[in-house]
Amino acid sequence: MRPVSSIRQLRYLPKSRFALTDEQQEVKAFFSRFFLAAIFHVVLALLLYRFRPALPTVYVILVFLVGLSTLRDKTPIRLVYICTYIASAELLWRMTKADVFWETGKYLLVLLMVLGAVRWQTRLQGIGILYFSLLVPGVVITLSILSFDVAQEQISFNLSGPLALAIAVAFLGGVQLNQQQAGKMLLIGLLPVISISTLVWRSTLTAERIAFITESNFITSGGYGPNQISAILSLGALFSMLYLFIALPLGIRWWIIMGISSILLLQSVLTFSRGGLLDLIFAIPAAMFFFTQNGGREMRRLLVLTVILAILAGWAIPNLNQYTGGALQARYEELDTTGRVQLIQADLQDWQENPIFGVGVSLSSVNRGLILGGGYIDVAAHTEYSRLLAEHGMFGVAAILLLVVIVLRGLRRAKTGLAKGMLAGLMVWSLVEMTHSAMRISAVAYIFALPIVVLSMDGDN
Image (spheres, rainbow, N blue to C red):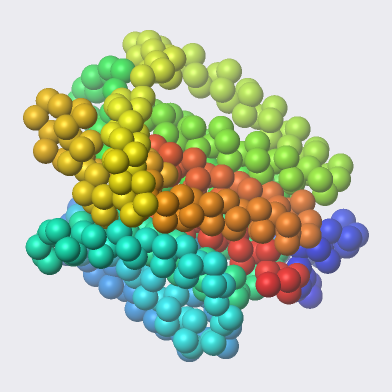
C-alpha cells in the first residue's frame, strides 16, 4: 500500500485503502514486529531486574547509541521514535537502578533533539524557547542565594522538565509524521511500559503478603514510587486507546491492543495512587470528543470501546475491591489530597510576597516544609503551576499562559478530528499530570509536545 501523507488525506480514502490487500500478511507483520517486541520487553524487564545495576546501565547506553545512529538518516522520523521510547523507558531505568543520574532521561531527550535540529536544520518553534526563557530570572535569583553546587542540583531537578518541554516544542514543530508513522510511534512508546508492567506483576505476584490500606501501595507499584508508576501505566493505556483510532487495527490486533490497555489501566488503579486514573478521566474524553468528528466509523469504535470498558469495570472493580478487602473502594472514595492543597497554599503565599520575580527556583520548597510541619525541612513541588507562580512570579504566569497558547494554536492548526483528538488526549494527559506530580518524569514534558508532529503533517507549521 502506498504511504498516506497525512491524516487529512486519509480521511477521504475508501475504507478498503485502510488495510493491506492481504489481511493475513498484515496480521503476520503485526505479530512479527510489535507482538514479538512486546514479548522481548517482558523478558528484558526480568533480566534488567535480575542483573541490576550493570545490565540496566548498559541498556541506557545502548538506547542512547541507537538514538545517535538515527542522526545518519535522511529524515528525523526514527529520532522521534527513539525519543518517544526514552520518555517511556526513563522510569524503567530508575526502577532497575541503572547507574545514571536522576534526570538522565530528560537530558538525553534534550541532547538528541538539539542534535536532530542541527542535523536536519529543522525550523524551530520560537514559542518553546520563549517559554523557557521566561524561567531564567528565577535561575539568577537562586544562583545569587545558594552556593553553586547546591543551586546547580536544585535548578536541574526543577527545570530539567521545563527545558525538555521547551526543546520538544521547538524541535517537534518542525517534524512531520503521517498516520501510519504516528501509529508506529505509539506502539514504540508502549514497549517500555510493557516492561514496567512486567515488574509490577512480578512484585505483586511474588509478595508473601500485601497490606492494603487507603494509601499508595509500593508492592503493587513494582516496589517503586506509586505516583510515577500510576502515571506511566496510564500513559501506556492512553497510547493503546489512541492507537485503536489512529492505526485502525482489525481483528485479533484490535483485541490484543485493547487487552494491553485494560491490563495497564487495572494495574494503574491497583497502585492506589489516584493520579494515573485522574489523568485518563480527562485525557480519554478529550481525545474521543475530537475523534468522533471524523464520522460514523469512529463513533462505532468509540461505542465498542465504551461497552468493553464498562464490562471490564463492572467485572474488575468488585473483584479487585474484594481482593483488597474493601480498601480499593475506600481509597478512591477518599477526597483527601494528601497535602497537595496545603502545598499549593504555601506556593501562593510565596507568590503573594514576591509577585514579580518569585522567590527563585527551588526556594519555595522551604516554605512548603514549614506549612506541612512535622519536621519537614523542604518539600519538592507537586503542582507545576503553583511552583511556577511561587518561584517565577509574573514570569511564571506568562509561562502558564504560553502552555495554553500552544494547546489552542495546536487545535486551530489541526485539520481533522484524528489530529485534534491525538493532540487533546496527549496534551491533556500531560497538563493534568502537572497538577499533582509536577514534572517528576520526562514523559510529562515530552508527551505535551509530541502531538505537534502529527499536526504538522498538513504542512501548516
